[in-house]
Length: 364
Image (tube, rainbow, N blue to C red; front, side):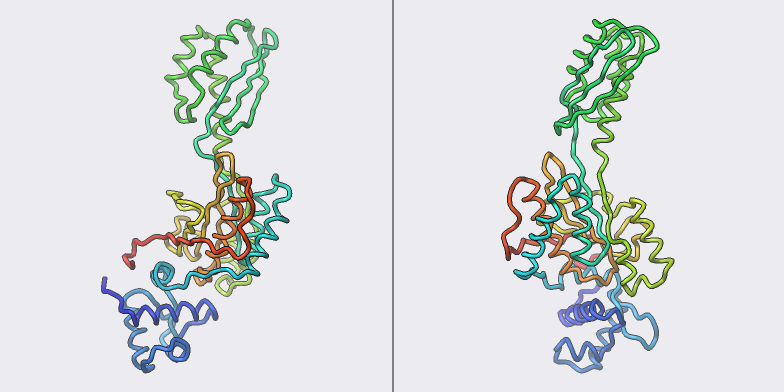
């Protein structure tokens, strides 16, 4: 791919900035008036034409101005846009809203998604996911010859229980043997490590001809599966209707239905560093077909108890990436401090901001 010159980069940045502001194709006259490039409109027109040929811009109609392509947005996000810092008033406002929204922690996920949507004026998704949850302890309590209670304590200190009724009789010694074997072999391991081989060996060791080991193992797998399933909430889907790109009711409805139905906005590899990292996925970089004409900005935070939280915002590819990334970064840092037992970020704090995205187009 041809190297893009500094002048082309300045013109590309000016086109993206103007298109974000107006949602209208950008012509050479507007660039000449706003970019202060020190060159003639004819030179700008030639540079715009070359940027189209290189794939950074496209021209919707023959006589129209240019609009950025996903490749142009990627270059802009990676290299050209200013990293926005929040004002003192904005940080005070976010901290105040954090304090208000998180009074009842049971509603944290709903409140986080609503707050992110309000701050950015785009639909937002918040979720929490726990990594490597295991069972810390089994208690198998004998009730009578046909009944016992399964109790499991997880590594996140949550407890689940189940009453098991049997069509056949079982003695108390068998229940005690199973309790000892499960505490010895099934604690500290993940769901995928509970294999048929492990269950069969437990049955043999317990002389379990009634298949009780399979019943207990099935409950363990169910508990671990439920514990590792992300808890998610989506807010502000109707905010899409205020964007020019979603004036087409069918297009807006498809994306709103996808988000409302629990459609995930996370990348397949789901790889994040720390809470100072913001990830940007532009148009075709998104895996889901419903997101191919949209962009997603995602920030990560520490939700406590070995739990990670993610905040994602969905909007048009024309979104103001710098403003959205700055707000999500500050919000994520505030959530990490608050949920980790600390205070919200200090007023006026400007977080280090790392923009991470897909560079597969070779533009960087």
